[in-house]
Amino acid sequence: LSSSGSIFQQIKSSVNNLGTNTANRTNRKNEEFRAVRSVSFSHLQVREYEVTLGDNPSVSSGAPIGLGWRYNPLENFSSLDGDVASRRPRRTTSELKLSDQERQRRLDIDPNVSVEDINSILQSTKHVQIERKESLNDLKMERLRKRQDRLLKERRLMSIRRMGF
Image (cartoon, rainbow, N blue to C red; front, side):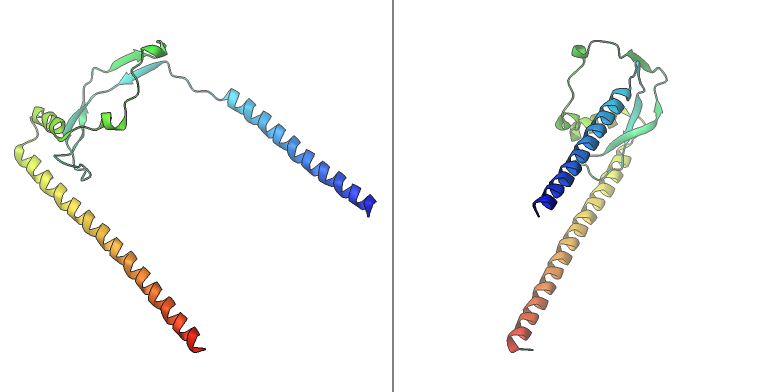
């Protein structure tokens, strides 16, 4: 038994080494693969699009805005070879959100957006928001009904078991 125990230990050791060697080879391949892969950009091209009345009902208040199809043909080009320290810091999510006053100001600049258009979108947005709330309430009620049905079924099963059936 001791000799078979030593054979078992040798096999176990070989399997462990095999796993370690495979892991080492895989790690080396991954390191080599990572070293080969790279992406770089030489310049940045910025195209400015018009801001117009949108249709996204997820706005918390005010009229939604979106990008139109028209853009300024004079595109801005910038070299990306500059110093990393000269870049502006990344903006937070809250800094990216526009207030309803800012959205309204941007829409006021657009001569193609009328007060009637804004009122129509506000009405439509409100309607969709109400429908979404109703859908969520329906979903919650359905979950409660399913939970209630499951509890009633469990209660019936327990009473049947108590009666000895």
